[in-house]
Image (cartoon, rainbow, N blue to C red; front, top):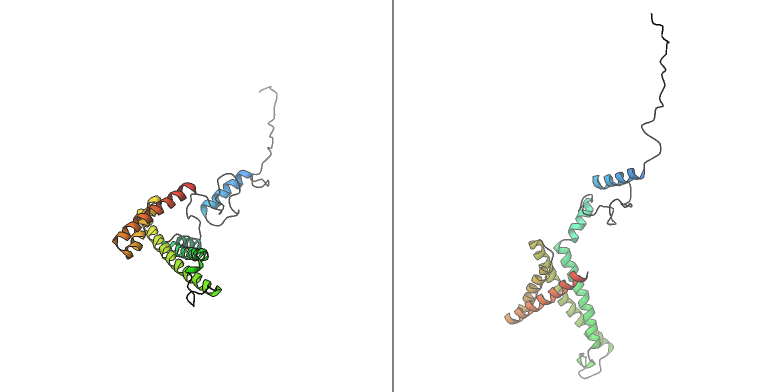
Length: 212
């Protein structure tokens, strides 16, 4: 029989820690949730990315994601605004407005002797000046509207065919547009118009690409 001292076992109950705390989400959790919301759908709990985790383009979507997360209505509007039809309409309307302004300006600075009056040799009245200004403005507006429509349509189709957006699109479109408009006055006028319009379009495209 053993004569040693008996030492009983002592059981100590450890404190149990809850798996989920009530402290709420941390800043790191919010950043993870923000990224998941922007990557997994259009339902977002935060109105855009308001932290510095990733840059925001101001529309609530991550830059570089293309049309991901966009609604069908947004896609339709985006595709229509990028179509050649919309660009042609905008260019035609812009040319019409520009022609009206240019017509009013040229009619206001021309000598009074160039204005046609009801009675030959008489001093032009306000009605005669208004009639001349209206006729000239409409003439300029129609011409500029046609130029804008033709140029924009040709440039958009060339850009779609080449699948590139560079200075050559404007040069090619200017050459074709100037040729089409100039051929109405003959072959020589068409060639001069094509070369001149191409050079002018190239300068405009170069300025826009390098200064904007």
